Image (cartoon, rainbow, N blue to C red; front, side, top):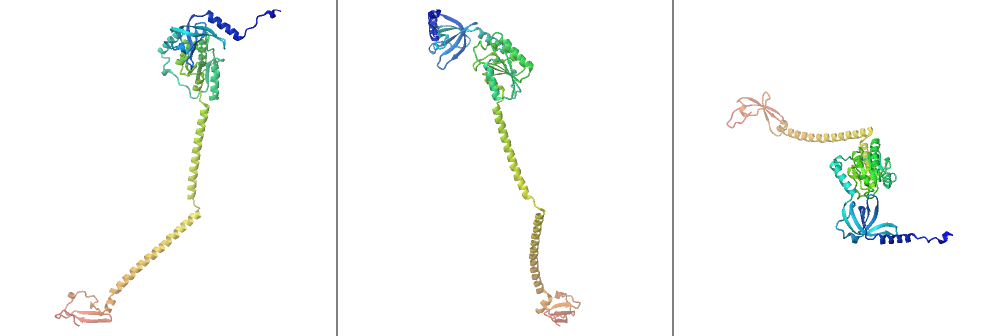
Length: 405
């Protein structure tokens, strides 16, 4: 019976509309102070951020027309006072402030603490590149310090499985935000060092506001990372987020995924390199085989059967004999011609032939040829030799010097 008189139910959009009107009418003209956190600038030029204090936060939108009037650009950590329309974005039922004006009061408490500790650690030399350890090129195992519920863990694990599925992953679970999380993070890092079962340690979590990432700005975390014997990679937040963990770690990665890529050899690149080496080796083996085959063919052509070699030598001997015979015949013909010429010459000057031409040869009685008339004596007996015989004569003087019989 009571249900018949119950008031009609509101729709969600109706509720949001009433709430918006109440907020806009009742909270108009207020100034609210707080610290800027998680500031983003859209491509349109509008700004979105959270205004927070130690206990709560509220979403804010600063549209481009208002932002152009600001004297100082906004940045995370600024402590400001703002006023604007406090309302509800009905489409999503989100409570927010559309900023109309603001005034900057200075850096927020968290940012002051951050800068103070940063300067202290830097002065102690914990940011120096000289103390940074090199990351292993081929780690046997990779450690991850993060929350088991973190999206960053899924991203890192997925990247490592894709790039290097053969490398074991060991997770050292810890809360990554909230009260006391800094102590848990430090304990996880110390545990990884104590076990010494990995070659490199990733310290990571996804993006968030400055307070979400604050555990990685705590002194205990920064000093524990700096003291780590294992090489460390900080992959905290997005690319634009910086924490003290980034400065003291051996390597800072812009994102958790990038941290995983830094410490893992790319399996695809390794396989590609192996394939290149295989192709190079195969080409080298093929070239070596071809060269060896050609050398073998050349040497094979030099091999002769003993009978073939004997036949070649026999043929060479026959060629030598033929040449020698030809040489000898030619030499003999030349010598024979010379002999004939000499014989003809000898015959021409032979005494007998000379005598037959009408000459006579004068000899002493002892047969010695007389070559000079001056050697003769008056009355000396001589012998004249003619072609057909001899005749004895005596030397006598006469006025003409002639010899008479």
